[in-house]
Length: 132
Image (spheres, rainbow, N blue to C red):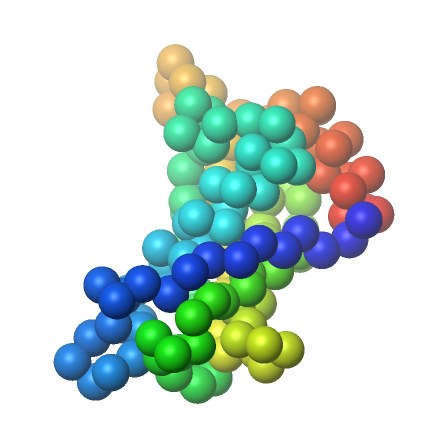
């Protein structure tokens, strides 16, 4: 398959005093896209997994406005480690990339809270879906 994509509506509440989507809202768009990725690709509820967001970086290219209506978030896998998954995200309006982001999620042992291997079932699905 390769790249996972999902569309997210730009809501009036996302807009700040400058008339564009507030920079903090991009993190919410990325979180929503990851939640949908886990549901659609891994058939898993992200909120039920012992997984934490370890890092997130976002590079903004241009503002998104309410009139843009919808953003598309594309997710690829940059690295699949023993206990972590690093995802890249392109946020697009139309075909134009308006932001790029990278997020690293770490799988945890639910009892100890320490890093734990990514479950084999998820690892094999990620590898198959993204051609890793």
